Image (cartoon, rainbow, N blue to C red; front, side):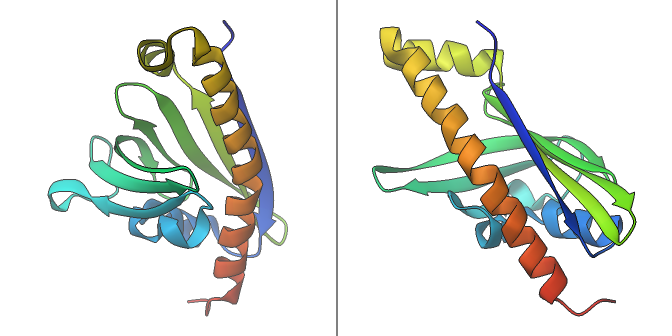
Length: 157
């Protein structure tokens, strides 16, 4: 099985450092994401490789929490995390361009996610994986647009 991935980009009229700071502050993710409504750092952690945070996700049919580990934290360049036991990887890269920064959000379903979904859903696992892929495909542009609105509406420092 090819593992599903999706990414999309947007140009934001802010510096890569400003945008990194916004995204790496996971406590703000509820402002941007259509599904992740709240995040908090575990054990007083912060945006560094190896740090953990918990996120609360809400869909009409269910609410759930995930624990994630930061796997990339390069100010102004990249911030990424892996959900649970290698279920999915979410990430953001920041590339300076004329007029601001290209922000790319990416999602990839991981081998641990396949194992988890096969255990949880049995023969229906591929349908649930496809649903997660569609949710990411639809949600990423919404999240990027919300980041752009928040970033461009803020006072520049």
